[in-house]
Image (cartoon, rainbow, N blue to C red; front, side, top):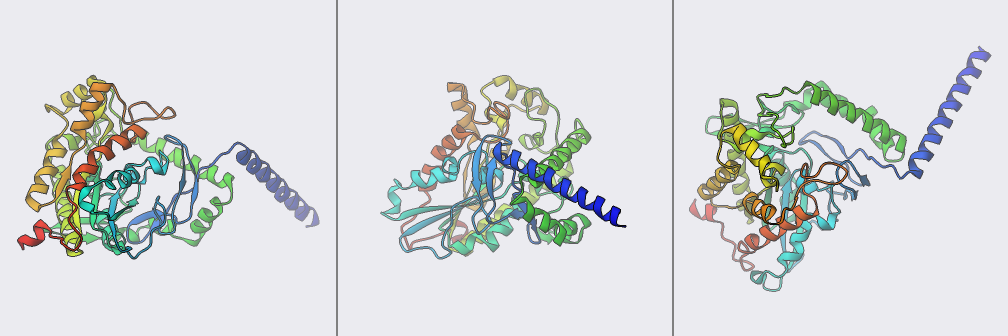
Length: 408
């Protein structure tokens, strides 16, 4: 027995030495890969408050998550007197871990809006509520439960093409999230994900201990990064070449792209996904109005829409049988017309700038040129386009009047 205990003690000591040595090497090398997200019973997942570290998978930036659970500086819940607040809600484009926070389009908006004449001397405060992977359903719930508590004067939804698929329980493969389901002419909320085994496992005390340990130990971060890499590889290997989600492999176009959103729906599932998306967005507009806030929507570009290599767009158009890649822009603009809110498309202008200056608005040296999220140039150009359109929405203090609210 003593020999067995001695052997176990030696193994434990050896393991501790090994882990300690690995930890030292990783810290010396500057390795950092925090576990950014944890389970959330309302939204599926959320950023973990207080987590910070380097993000290097795509671009390179030091990211801090504030106490409220967002990649933003801290904001007082009560809006100060003489301040005009804009709440920007979205997914990874708003989270913007690929660039420094000051380079994110919503951060640049704060500076650009200060020159808006309609503000009449009021200060501008832009608040970011971005979480990677969120669809419009989660963004609606997040706005209702959190963003509106900050008393914004305007809610800006940053809409990405993959949101359409994210909103569909029939099409979205990552289903540990809430969905709105069609219910007659309306919608009903389905939160059944909270009872599924995978969500319950991720919510366990054991997993929470594991996530907490990762905040201190780079070795745990490395293990998690390896697990995530294997998961991505398996999903990519299992993905069909041309699945129900519109993931055709098109030369020059990112293989993860849900390209079906760039063309009129070709099946009932995609049409239903669009119907759900439009209904949620209309509800979000009305929700903002009930809280005396204007609502606007801007469309985040996909890299293929604004690639300066025109052959990429041509390949995409040929694959879909369309004349351009702006179907999503037109459909949401029509929704805005019907519901009385502003829609700010970005793709047509960014495409024009890309062609004129051979500018890549997406991509990074450590990822791939022209693919992925916006780089600094993309965020800057987006802010330049959005700012004057938002300025036109600003009304004198105390004179809010929402078009759709006035019509009821």
